[in-house]
Image 1 (tube, rainbow, N blue to C red):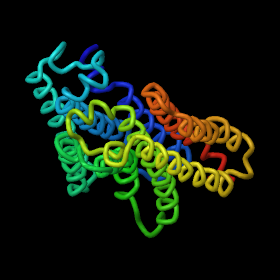
Image 2 (image 1 turned 90 degrees about the horizontal axis):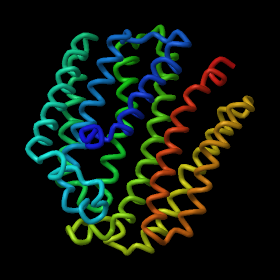
Image 3 (image 1 turned 180 degrees about the vertical axis):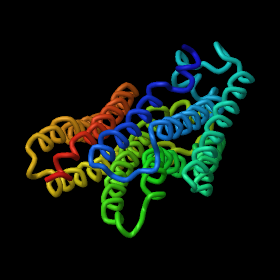
Image 4 (image 1 turned 45 degrees about the vertical axis):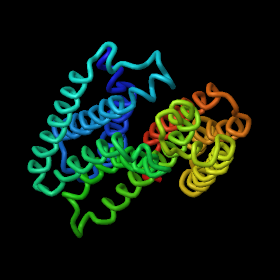
Length: 304
């Protein structure tokens, strides 16, 4: 159980869910030409999850001092799992992920795609060891990597089968995947800022350069409050443009995605305590989850 908590199994399950939704709720029901069979998508999921797990482990290794202040009850490294053992797991998960990525890239005849897994693995290490301590750059990079865990499905499924005969269809579905990735990027970026505000005490003592430390907790909260309107406005526009003829889809998105975002906007303005920002972080995760589940609604849009 300690290992599962170390690799943040709940976050990994979301990766599995989203990649399966793209394959089995978005692409296959419409007969889109794809490159991966059942085994192929399974290998892609395993590769992505393993590299993400390795990233979570190295992040915890470098965050032991910070976490001992911000969340001492959740520190695993050095307590239930030694740092040496954690490093071994980090190396093992990376090797598995990269190896599966190498095999899969050659299996679909796109050997250069292998570099995606190597780049993500390197970026996760650089993020944990350095970028996380730089102003907003770390927030941006980790959010890009979250988006890439979605885009990678489109890259492996659609690009290898792209030709002049199916270009319109392939591009249409790739754009849908990009829309989901952009939503995930935006929500995760906001969540990272909320987490920085929540963890300001530990980050200060470990000399990290986060937004709330650079400009103050209150100013950072005000910026977060303003930034919350970006995905909210974009989502309202997206729903109005693509789902306006489908009341069930509109109802779902308004109730489970737009509604929580409005709630987040209101709660951010009034947030003051550490617990308030922890609550906001949780709400961002739920909003992202329900946003990803909206992939089940695209059959109402694409077929009508």
